Each structure stands twice: as structure tokens, then as C-alpha cells.
Image (cartoon, rainbow, N blue to C red):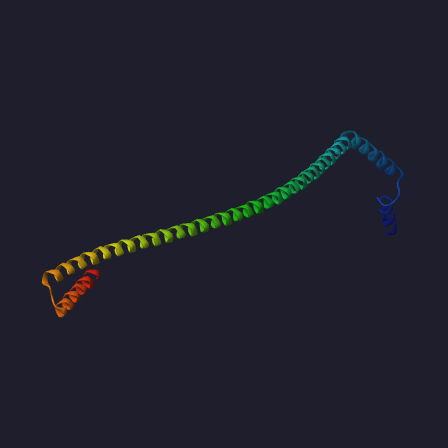
Length: 175
């Protein structure tokens, strides 16, 4: 049995057989040449193409990043300018509103003064008219009273009663 076991070891793939080594090397070299001619070129060109596309994508990404940073910077500048402009407009609006408020208050005060002066003038005029009417009435009553006194040729008591009657007439006409 030992002999059969040796035979198995002799013919096995683990034992160095020069013919097998030669043909394995020839097959490997032929396969290597065949792969180099047929597959190595396309594999390398595919790898180069892939490398170029990756590099192109990286370049585009860097370019897009630079563009985005520039755009972000421009947007920040525009926002800052817009904020400054908005602050200026708000300030001008407040100043204008304050100016308009002051003008309106001044006009209202002037108008109130005019109305008060006009009311005083009207009151004074009506007072003068009332006084003039009262004077006319008193003069008329005095003339009528004097006329009655002269006609009646009265004594002192009748004279007093006539004057009191005239005063009473005068007070009822005033109210």
C-alpha cells in the first residue's frame, strides 16, 4: 500500500514535474500575451477614461464651489447693501413723518389760534351789537318814559311806579 501511496504522490500536482511547470508557464505567458493584446488595452483605456471623468468631475466641482463662493460673497454684499439702503429709507421715512407731524401740529395750532381769534372777534362784535341794541332800547324806553311822565304830570309815587315798570319791561326784554 505504500507503493500506491507513493505513486499518488508522484503524479500529484504538488510534486514538481518539469513538463507540467513548462506547460503551465507557456500557458500563463500565452494567456498574459492574449490578455495584454485583447483586454489590457481596453482595461487601461477604460481606467484612463474613468480617471479623466473623475478628474473632470473634480474640476467641475471645484469650479462650481468657486462659483458658489463668489455668488455667496456677492449675495452677502448685496444683502449688506440692501440692509444699509433699508436703514437709510427707514430713517428718511421717520424724519419725513416727524417733519410732517410737526407741520400738521403747527398748522393745527395756527388754525386753532385763528379760530379762537375769530371767535373772540365774533363775541366782541355780538357784544357790541347787544350793547348797541340795549342802548337803543334804553334810549327808546327813556324817551317813552319821559313822554309818559310829561303827559301824566305825575307826582313822586306815580313817577316811581312808572320807572319801576320801565325797569321791569327792560329786564323782561333782556331775558
